[in-house]
Image: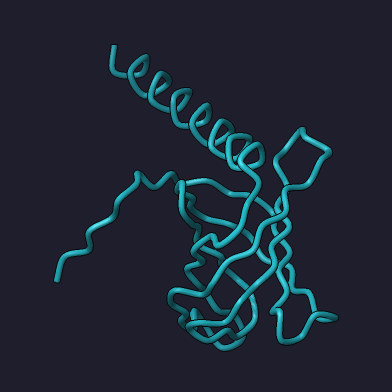
Amino acid sequence: MSERRRFMRFDVVLDALYGLLEKPSSRTKSYISNLSKEGLKLEGGAAMTKGSLVELEMSIPGDNMPIFAFGEVAWAEQADNSKYNAGIKFTKINNHDRVRLLDYVYDKWIKTKRKKKAEVN
């Protein structure tokens, strides 16, 4: 079975907090391991179910302004005994914040590609 994605996915590690909208007072610390224009992968969080709505707070290193977004759980799986991973599709994110996120991961991707190219030469 092959997976077809509409947008390029970038590997990245960003700190995140999320809360299920059904439980607004509960927030879980997690991290983002990859990101695309339309969503992200959360790792190390608490159990979620497909279709749940979440509120996200993301942190870009060196930037003291958090990014807030809303999303829907596209898939969820247990990673180990106490940690879970989930794919989150953005349902609402400010365009300026989306650009900030994508600029950060794109810059890291370009720097990694340049470093690998320099190591080969």
